[in-house]
Image 1 (cartoon, rainbow, N blue to C red):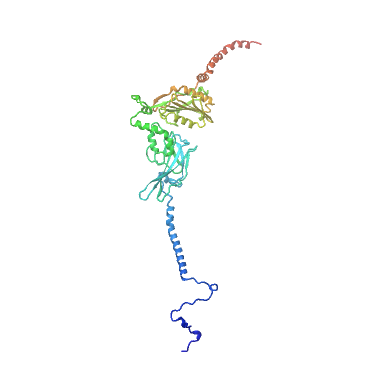
Image 2 (cartoon, rainbow, N blue to C red; image 1 turned 45 degrees about the horizontal axis):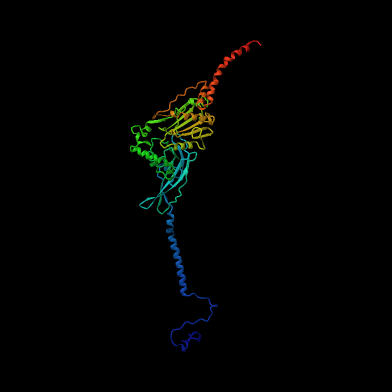
Length: 471
């Protein structure tokens, strides 16, 4: 075998180095001319860093739904509405709302203006064991057409297990029985409530109704509780009477007489004698005939009576209305409130008593007054075609004030029966007699002038002879 060439043979180590493992040679190239080679440990670190970033990203993606779940569960779940009207709604009907409708007088169908309407949303919370978790309310009032609108609930009560479980509506107007969307005053479940275009019919308050039962029925929210505060004392009196006590403010010495509780059931107030068709005709000097009946805007009781004088064959501006309260159980303050509510913008004067209200608007002239001594309140409304000015209405009101002693009690159920006969043709003397009662100075002079007027034909006979002779 030939010997390898010199260039093909491995170089031998110098003898001075001895025998042993060889050390790596140090390259003589400068760093500037040779690219750096990454070391093995640096590559491992980069790989580990890359793996960590990838693992973190995957973990974040996997954990995102878990982190977002509590946020998505904050909005409460809304249960389907349970009231009967919700099943027949064409529009969307939910407990969250919105709600709208109209409040009407059950007797007349007229809109009930400025009635307080409160919507109450009820929440519950829990899984398995569920309990109440607060409520939200929204308050509004009916407009001139009796309409109301409640916007959707803000759903401000939140939590992972919170549910909107109920909604009910409460309506309150003094002088009426309140309204609840879930039950009636008589205790039966309400089946006519609807989310949209609801018709809430308010019944007039009856004296036989119990204020204690009314407050228990309303379970009033805070706003309505403040408005119904006047009923608390009357509710206590109702409970006292149920336990065998006497009526409102009656002393114990009244035992043996018919108590107010018994009187209110057996008697009605009769105010028909305060004003008669003849009395109306004498003041405005008209010859209209009237059909006398009951005013149905308020329930007739032992302390209230409303009389309607309807002109026959005439429109409403020819009618006259008389409302009288005598010693009402709640005092005269509710009567004053009724007068001021019925006469918005009325001026307060002293024309009839120290507390008199007058109002003259298109179509009607009204006069209301309070007699503190006799505990009587009166509201007179007269059409502007029957009472041509405020002075005429004041004459009628003063006549009513002087006739307050004619108020009487009649058996409950007795209706007004007045036969308005055909007025006499010569109606001039009657106005003078009527004015004699109202205008102290003028009427006495008018009858004195009437007698010479009858004697004129006798004085004219002598003058007739010369006139008939030749000239």
